[in-house]
Length: 528
Image 1 (cartoon, one colour):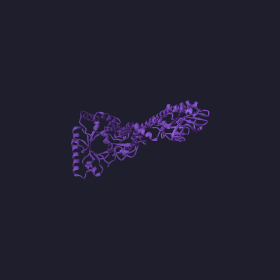
Image 2 (cartoon, rainbow, N blue to C red; image 1 turned 30 degrees about the vertical axis):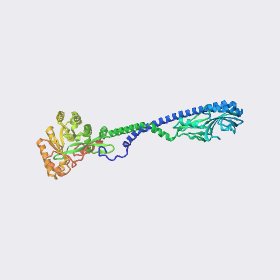
Image 3 (cartoon, rainbow, N blue to C red; image 1 turned 60 degrees about the vertical axis):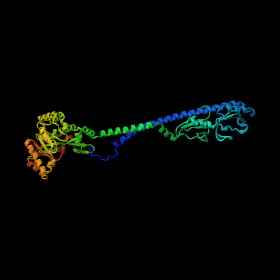
């Protein structure tokens, strides 16, 4: 409920929105950073894989050069060729061994000289390259073999798998790299596997050589992305959290500002939700309605009617009461003016004002505009001074009251006897009426001291020539007591409760001899 004591708030968009706003820069920032990281990982994987391909091609260039140099010797006796085979091994850092074969039989090696071992051309991809899982000399140790042939004879050169392993480990220490030749592949473990190598979890890249029948597969393991996050972006992560927290706090501040009592009252004023309620004031003797006090009610769209004690004090504290009172006076005039014939001449309309209304002369224009809605003399406007804020007797205030009296507007002291400055007001300002607070009226017949105070107030008003109105009359005993003491006017639930404009006008029309309301009441009269 507006401006009430706070209750435990249910989960609502006002609660969730700051979290959403705070999470938005974090989520967006993380998304951008993750995209950037993936792009960097992809680019790095691409570059690393390309370097490995280039390095392996460089190694194979050495093997091919050695094999092609030895190719003319294929078929010649091993005794004549073996020194040349060994010279190629000595001169080339990557060549581990060189060999000659004829009629698909390996007959000469740089290591053993004469040799006898079958050569199967089907083992070689495109007849040139074979990734071996060791040989008879070094079983289980990876070798890459290059074969150059001329018919059924040719030369074979090999490179130790450690050279390949060095390229994989040094060029891409943080990446998963695998060399594939046909259906065989080797990773950083140095073991030759058969089949298709598994794809990397992220930034997967597959590059094939354009010169030799092999390919290199690169990428990163699943855990590597998290490690890169922690090593590359701790400062940015902290900044994102700070920005998210700042955005959430700013959003919460804006929501609280937009839903603050001041903002809520301003919204209600713009929506014309403040309505006049009328509580009749009866005159002494015949108890006919001599006027009415206009009370402000808030017709909230969700909460319905809001009690004035829940919003009037804050409106006075925030200074919004002036605009609210101006709107109330206009609403009252527009509601009653079409039915001015129901009002007796000199019908009193009482409206509460505070110290905020007395700081300049704009109240004069508000009162003048109000009175212009009615025939001359039909309505007497009475401004009731409240004491929630002290009214200082400044030159502006004194001029204001003087001009109000000249206009025919009367001044009453509301809740007389309960404030700390009531007697000062009587001395400083020209006052026409005193309104006895209902707390004194309620003690009639119950508290002798309070009754004496009440009688003193009545006697004081008579000596000062002031009219007097008793508020909060609820019993016949109170009514009769006040009548015996010549109290001019009475107001309270005994006579009528505060009522909306439509009900007030209907009650006026129902009096004997009163002009009847039209059959079709304007919609604005039926509000409330």
